[in-house]
Length: 344
Image (cartoon, rainbow, N blue to C red; front, side, top):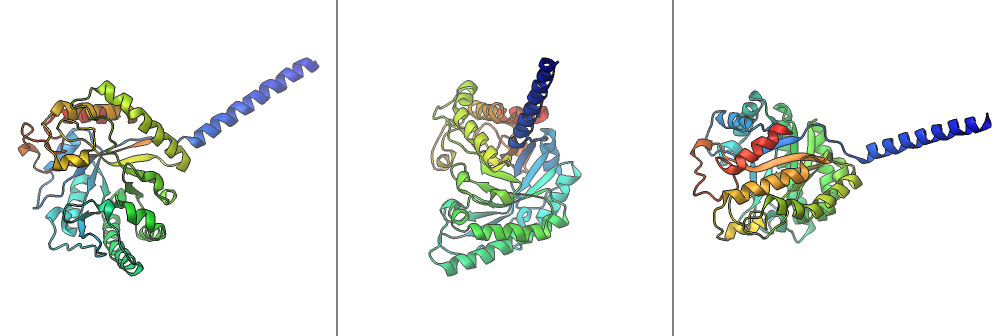
């Protein structure tokens, strides 16, 4: 009788341990139920109808990022946003209209106010010399972001990206970002993220106050002219492991607030340098890079999805033959995106 009791106790203990382990693993994992199959929409300069949103819907995208740019100069604190001088799609009127068009065609919306650093430099290099300058920048930037937070609430947009690739400002001014997030949440009830660059997301200290770890997913993974899907999947492994580990550490899902490849040779290598280089047009290379990214990340439970860069309203006029732009429109990559967005 004693031996039987011991066996029962042992089995019971094992069951408790197993349940405890399963519960612990469940807490560690950041399970993403529905992937964000998104497209980044280029704000049109003039009024457009809703054909663009129907075309995006046709490739099984469920989300669109709407991007009203503001502008800054190097080492100057002003954030310049003038609705009356912007492209129509960046004006308050245009952002409202495009959100309505997207929602009417069944797309969810991320509003992504983004600052462009003028004179051809990258916003990540933006920096200021004095505390007074930083305080002026903070006032200007908060006004810009809260303008769109209030608009996003009025139009029931589904997410806001509160900043993009502000390497120095994000790392040097963490208290500002925490205050900004709190102020946004007072006027907006949707999801929030921030778009860090691929090489500095681990230095951002305010992920806990956001819903997603947002990353510009332009990881340099292969110098090959036309890398195969197999090569690219292998090259993704170290980054995949790094992202999984970080997601677990902060207990937040990873979202590629931007990702994509140009239709040219070396599509998966330092794409930011391609803006100033001549590389031969190569649609297959672009398609391979997209497919490898989907194979490497889209099934992962910690990966929330992302927004492919980028999509123009003039869809049917896009010439794929003489085009080395980021857009997948009318190219082999479009079919790859459509297949994966439908599947997941």
